[in-house]
Length: 214
Ligand code: AMP
Image 1 (cartoon, protein in one colour):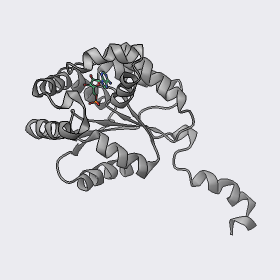
Image 2 (cartoon, helix red, strand yellow; image 1 turned 90 degrees about the vertical axis):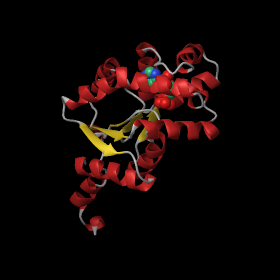
Image 3 (spheres, rainbow, N blue to C red; image 1 turned 135 degrees about the vertical axis):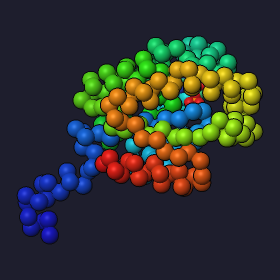
Image 4 (cartoon, rainbow, N blue to C red; image 1 turned 180 degrees about the vertical axis):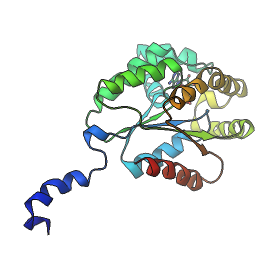
């Protein structure tokens, strides 16, 4: 049918792409350590074709390669503290540059401070785009500790096995990271999503908010 209609065939490819360059969809998956961001990110990138950028994963890869950045970051991560803003912002900036032309990004574990949020806005603005939505997973504190201890049995992550480090990470979240939600709230970009239940139930809750926004 489109073969017989040149005008339609010119426009159809654009109509089939919900995220054109101008309308990239950039999502932040937000929530405390253990709230399921990693698990849900995997499902979301498959569903929506976004590029997953997890600062925790990027930092662990720097540590595995024993780069100077990795060595610096490790000192903080081993104590459950946040890595300095300048280190993380530089790292995410090059990751964004390395993936020009994607439909959108899914930021996982970033931004974690108000300064990181402001820096991210500038990085995206330089690419003529912005954050579309922040989805915040809500999980109670006892459930978080339980999940992280359980994950520590298999993840091989030293920061998941020690209860003191887990509690330091949750304290860092309350002290520095909850400010990030306030930052995006002023632009009306935050939606809270129930983070307890089955993986699929939580995923459906996230998809509903994304689909409402598309
Ligand atoms: P995650 O895998 O997101 O739980 O991160 C593990 C650790 O990496 C955190 O406890 C921090 O020490 C560090 N980290 C990850 N992302 C950031 C970030 N955006 N800012 C500062 N530190 C980070």
